[in-house]
Length: 313
Image 1 (cartoon, rainbow, N blue to C red):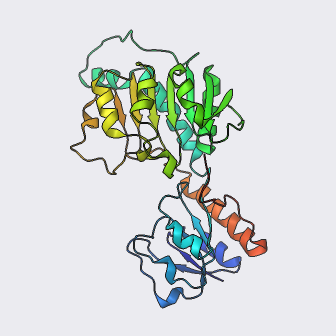
Image 2: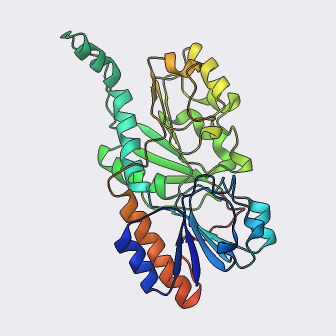
Image 3: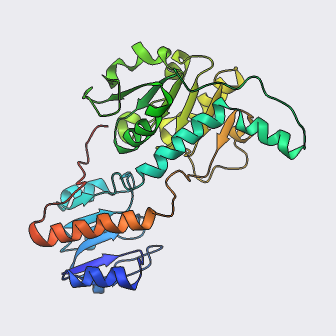
């Protein structure tokens, strides 16, 4: 069975794939184009070759395994028309991202940026404005694996952790979970709001003017999901108006964030370069998930993390 792989996991790991019975075709993902070599490819293991690689030319492709959690790079209509199954890397980056969320909250509450400025100036100056995380009310937008790993790590800080999802279904580590349709009724109760929402049609600019107007003036906003969830122009306006104790952004509407963006200029905005998923374990966890799915597919076509293109959050 031919499998097209667009990332080199090393000779030993590729050998393990071959031992399962796959003929591995290894190609660099950037600017990848269809060729006759892919005629019998049944499995595509990749991140995002879809800007140049035309999926409709694959006559035997049945399954795409993404290395990412997000699926917004997919050519959905083509996949539906060709009845191609997709599985993602759900949970693969959740542990480091959970740590990143905790870090982001504490950086703001403890004014880490201001303390670092004092260090650079070699200035001994005690900051009496720093705050505790204890008893703070936290709301996660979305209750998937990233939110759950974050909530699990926050439990030890004695804060109240709630979440919203499409149906209001209960989730481990959350005190309460509400339907997303109720968000406007509860948003003003929370000290910290964290977006882990997927990028789908209903979540575009989910955090908009109405949403931000309802948030506490001295609240904290964190986004580790997709930049399009937040209306950045409105966020800039709200920051200029004195809203937010702090904002931590790891993702942006356009990446990389341009030098002209006003977001760079706010002392209470923490900016990172889509870095929250990185750790020394990223390739190990990613390969383990891919390998497990390759075994399952070869045996009975039952995959973990199979994607429903119209799923909620």
